[in-house]
Length: 140
Image (cartoon, rainbow, N blue to C red):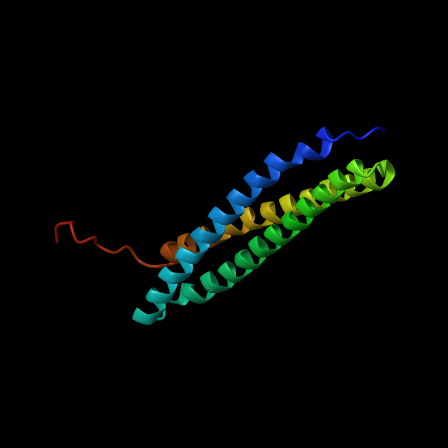
């Protein structure tokens, strides 16, 4: 298989989009942690402990997604430099490494997405266990 400069360069837009997605998820989780912290200061709800554990796992996964994505980008850059230096076999190895690490990053992102649904289920389960409450706008 012949590897040209365009092959590793194809990964650049994908990696940029992944970083944007990971950063957005990270910012969202930061906002959630701040809200949960204020809720915790007001009163210790039973679901907060489960929410905190879920958020810890998700934050750790996002961190690993970003780290593995960075390794993928560095491998891609090294592959391009190897092609420029006319080290085709080494470049092919580096490009393969980049693709594999990107796949790992995507699998970690999938895991985090699946956990995010679990966070919502914690709230839904709590609401299902509690008796119906009257909302402020309902007539007494």
